[in-house]
Image (tube, rainbow, N blue to C red):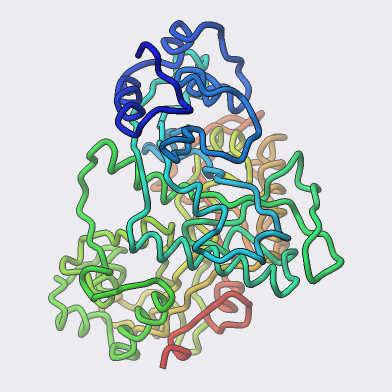
Length: 456
């Protein structure tokens, strides 16, 4: 577009220019704007900025000042056979001293939430010039999302006002989290109301949320329902308590009886209890996914427990691909995205092999690990990555030697293998939360939990 000026461009002009991007390769843009980007992190973003003629600067104003629009370039990557957003989308650094003086009305981060997203696919084995641009989306939060963003912001602000910035963790946000950000993990900043310096952090949109935006941008259709619409949820302050209160009438009843009442067909599938739970929470179709769970990255897990509420097994996550595990960073890891916000529901059986239909529903627990738990999980995650990298994928540290997580096989059968460094094929594996720690979560012996008992 001849004469395009990012400083004066209108929203319509920005959209018109952006709509020419999908289907192009990053190398095509480099031909248009001149020069070649390097292979470092952020170089695709610099190329897209040059396409929009945005000069590199550190000014606090939006990338498109007249329209009040920010530009965010978001990498997608294939993980485990499906597409996902590769990393958090950093919105702005957190200044602890100014944060406590703000209200949501004038919050700095709020002014950064009118965003033009440019989604591209990161291809690990290819030059950046071959990365395809998949979609663009101009986004402004609607009322429901705005309420969720505000709740996340308030949670961070309250901790800082209490002199507890050192206790912030990624789990303090459902959509907008305070991720670590700095030259390295030791970068510290002053905070008000405490002499203890805290890690440098930034507000960032979580990958689960931005992936939903991507799916909207490409018109990806899937069977989802909104609990906000179905049960009249108007805000997220009471989101967890409302869902738990809906569970109360079913506590102690068998999965089979509840399934009959809510018209969920009998099944021997592992997902049977989860389907019943979705109906309890308010979905019209037991097969539907819940959009609020997807946007917040909420991980729902069913835990089979004894009548004394001791788990029969550790709690698993999906199997990982070793090459992808070794490439990712902790902050953008699949494990962190799964563990930082969880809903664990116990189903009580007399034995480990008791049929699901005969198991009773126990009290659900929402769990967001605190900063110390996150750090423990990170440390153990790095132990396993190191062991796999040096050729010990067949003799990893056992669960008995870790505090929260371990790695063990999670495969369909003996033929379901992955390739590990040095030693070659090994049975596919996944991360698991240790059985004993699952029990502590369900008994609410760890911080960051809210259970059904507190909903009444």
